[in-house]
Structures are given as structure tokens and as C-alpha cells.
Amino acid sequence: MDENALIKAAGANDLDAFNRLVLEYQARVYALAYRIMGDEQSASDATQEAFISAYKHIRRFRGGSFKSWLLRIVTNACYDELRRRKRRPASSLDELTEDWDGPEVSRATSMGEAAPSPDEMLERSEIQAAIKRCLDHLPAEYKLVAVLVDVQEHNYQDAADILDTPIGTIKSRLARARIQMRDCLQRYRELLPAAFRQGNEDE
Amino acid sequence: MPERKLSERRDMEQLSAYLDGMLSAREQAAIEERLRSDDALRRKLEELRLTVRAIKSLPDVKLPRNFTLTPDMVDQPSWNPFLVMRTATAFAVLALVITIGIDALTHFSARGGAMVAMEAAPQAVGAVEAPAMREEALGGAASDSINAVPEESAPLEESVEGEGIFTAEAEEPQASEEGVQERAQVESGDAEAGLAESPQLTPVPTRMDEFEDEWEETSTPEARPAADSMPTADSMPTAEKMPAAQQPLSLIRLLELLFGGLAALFASFMLWFRRRH
Figure 1: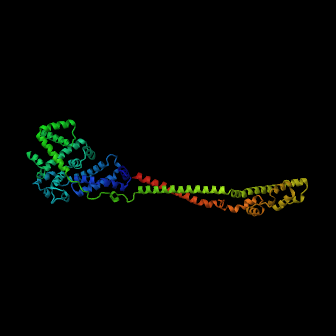
Figure 2: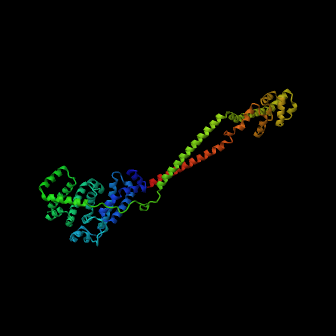
Figure 3: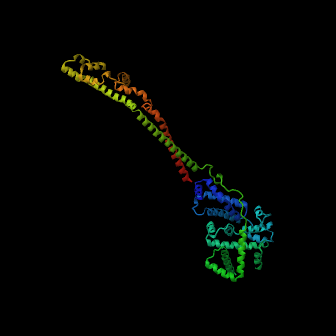
């Protein structure tokens, strides 16, 4: 059964048909959620919530890329959660900047955490942990674009479709996300390639 | 300073888009011209390039579990009424088609068998029809004789009176049939001629059992061979056997109605559930 037939069947409350679509796209949906949310539990919750929402509203799908439609749903779910967290006391990029005291990335003392999370332990190297930390602390609207374009390697148009945003906004937000990432990664300069350190030190 | 920051931001946006090949040809030519002469701009481009490379170096995320949905997650009953009704409709239609098929086959085979039997035993058919024909003939003759005899008793009386011959018999207008018939035998030349066509049927059969009793005894020689062939026509769908042969067909018709009704019912529910959702 092809994707359109599965979508149609799912629209007729065929849960098995929808679950076949879930199996097809869950890896990509979860990966996006994980990169936006930054931890396994939040990403799992957002992914599950996104699939439930997609199933309940699948009749609203009006053709086009089903993958983009799913990614938009999970992106919105993540964005809502991030905004909700923002209203609560939490660590921020400013806090990260203030607490920065050297290249002890693995200790993560600046993140308000006592020890590295299991997710971070899974990262293969300290540089990857540093990149993840910087990404996690981007403002939500910048992070969404950076994850879609730089992590998941969607083109600008796909990102614009998923985020339902003009392509000019994507271009602008991506540039700002990259600048903030650059500035954040400067703090981990010992971990970064020499050329990167050199450029920073020259300034 | 704000102007410088604004210019720097615009430069960074241009460099970011340049990395992705998202600048127009004119913008790209302009930024490349500046990059050739501006070391600081070149350095910023390199920083961005390394940043993007760093972000892209993040490892793939491993899926912790499957995210397939269960009915309770979506507040859906474990059975879907629409799907159940759709399946039930399909089964009812299938049963209806099979029943109609069996009906058609049974119907054609019965007709075919009857036609074969009719071709094989035309004499038997004649035998079946013969009694009816004889009944008509005999009934007609009998009624003729009845009409001819008792009801003509008045004109007969008139004629008797006119002719002055049968005074004794004319004094018994309430005479029994036997008496009338006996008298008819005696008196009227026309009546004799009519009865002569079936001379042994003078006792007029007013009931079938009487007729049948008489039939065995008084069958004409022409009718006997046909009557003799009656026992050989057991295989024929005679008037007595036809209801028994039609019974399975009636059952099939009932099943057809049942399955047709169920199919319509299930289809209605199916459409209703679909519309409701």
C-alpha cells in the first residue's frame, strides 16, 4: 500500500494504516524533536504527542509532502513546550556565558546540572557535547531553523514550509543562529580546530 | 555604532546564504568581489563555515522506542464501528451473490431437468393431460345430459302434453336422477344420441371420487393406454410433486432477501458512522 492509500485509510480511522506511517517517519520526527528539545524524555513526549495529533487531524492534510506536514506538527509541539519552559525559571544562554570558566564541558556545571545527562554521555566526544550545549541554548526560533537546515539538512524552502514562515525569515534566522553558535563555540575554543581559535583570538 | 552593527549583521546574513548557495547571481558576484579584498570578511566566512561544519558533525540520533499508537492513546475503541460495518457489508454482499448464484444454478438445472423429462416422456405428459381432458369431456357430457334431461323436463312435459305420449312419467317431476336418466334413456332420441358418445357414463358423476371410481371401470379403450402409462410417470413433476420440488427454491429466496436486507442495513450503518466521523 502506498503512502497516499495509507493516509486515506488513516483518515477513515484505520489505526494500523497510520502506524505504518509512524514506522516510516518516526526516526526523522524523533531526531528533529531530540535536537530541538535536547533530551530523550522531552523528545519522546513531543514525538508521541505529535503522532497523536497527526492521527487526530489527518483529514486536514491537503496533499503535498506528508513528511513536511509531520515535521511541522512535531516542530510546533516542541516550540510550544519550549515557550512553556521559558516562562519557568531555567538556564539560559546568558547564564551559560556568565558561568563559563573554561573548557570543562563534560562537567557541565554552568548548565545548572549536577552532572552530565545520559544524553550527553551518549555524545561521542566533548566537542559534540559542546555543540549540543550551544544548540540547546539557542532561542527557540533560531534553533528550529538551525536544526532543520544545518542538522537535518533541509533546504530553505523545506524549512519555510515546515515552519510556515517566509523564506527571507528563514535566511535571516539561520544567519543569527549561526552567529550565536559561533559565539558560543568560541567559549570551547580549546576543543575547536586551530583555524577557528585563531580567528577568534585575532579579534 | 548601530549602523556598523546593522552592516555587520547584513554581511553575516550574506555570508550565511553564500555558504548555502542561496544568493542571487548579482549578490554572489558582489560578495565574492568583497571577499577578495577584505581579510576580515574572509575570516568571518571561515568562522561560519566551521560553525556549520561543527553543527553538521552531530551524530545521528538513536530511536529509543517505537512511537506506534494504541487505541487508548487516541481515545478510540478497540473496534472501529465503520470498519466493522464495512466488513459486515462486504460479507453480506458476498453471501447474497453466492445465494443468487446457487438460486440461478438450481433454477436452470431444474428447468433443464424438466425439459429433458418432457422430451423423454411426451406420452406421460399426454397421460397427465388426458384425465383433465376427459374430465372436461365427461363433465360437459354430464352437464349436457343434466341440462338435456331434468331441466328439459318442463318442455318435455310440454312436448309430452303436446304429443300425449308419456303421461305416466310426466306425473313425477321430483324424480331422482336415476329415474330421470332411466327416463331419458327411454324417452328422447336426441338424448340417446348425446349419451351414445359415452354410453357407459350414464350414471352422471357429480363428484370426483365417483368419477375416479367410474374412471377405472369405464375408461374408453382409447383412453386406457394413456391411463396405463400413468404409473411410469412417477419421475414427472406432477401436480402433487411440484410443491416438494419448489421448497429449496423458496428457502433460497428467503436467504436472498435476508442477505440483501442485511447488506443494506450494514451499508447504512457504515455510511452513518463515516458521516459522523
